Length: 369
Image 1 (cartoon, helix red, strand yellow):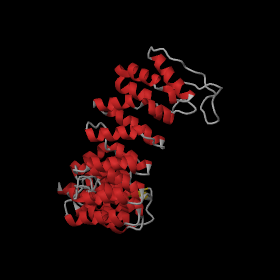
Image 2 (spheres, helix red, strand yellow):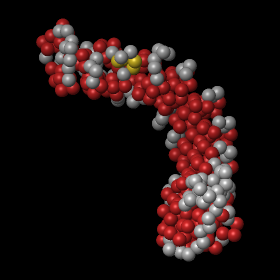
Image 3 (cartoon, helix red, strand yellow):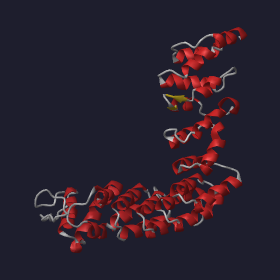
Image 4 (tube, one colour):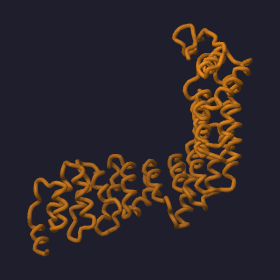
């Protein structure tokens, strides 16, 4: 074996090697071929060479010399270094972040997160990098952290870092950390940036706090940001919880001016197997039509009749029939919407022809369904 190793050291690198030859090179101690693999145009060859060199028992200094390909950090080589733990061989990987001119440094951080020996460099980036997008990306290094001091530091960034992207990333990094309950609750209630409140709200259920229903419902009903209300709905997906279902009923029964929130609300109710979720979709049809169906047929996200039918088609006839009877406050478009759907279900109802207003969707003088 020593003969092969010495021979590899003095031989020049081959002009071309394949992935198969990389495998053979590891078995024979062919350092030249392994190093040559790092400069091949084929990405899978570079990845294979890096994966072999990270645990190579002989000289692998070429690895640190060729972390870049085509004048930028090489995602293929970094992929090959995933799970690397030998700091002596691979610790150099963190130096890629030292160059502020390195392209796509936030994406580089994401690649480095998969390489354990890069953790120390990522900790530094999270704390002090001049680029807030890099700091935000590096915050994931604290996922599943055990050190109370580290967790306290992340909580401090969530509470007071001047950059909202960093605060939002800090909230995400606290997933499952029960010690962060107070910090996340405070962020949900008081952070000035909706993206931070939404991120904290998305993380909060992982802590299984006693006040989860209260916190999420308050955000759904009272937060001014559609982004936060959508995040609150995300925590209720497929819920069977009675308090959450009551909150969803309240949200569905009162006006929400954001169409994206209404669309998410219907999806959330449709995702729940609880009978109460089906009941809500049935019961609120009249108020929903009166509130949201004005000059034209509803957009897909506001189509409550379709949402109810998809969730509980066996009750659709009765639900829509009740909506037809409750149509005293509907616009012409609302009556046409409910009547046409009831006809499709086999019922009898008038479907008026409605003149489209300037804001309507009709191409002619009729509302189209």
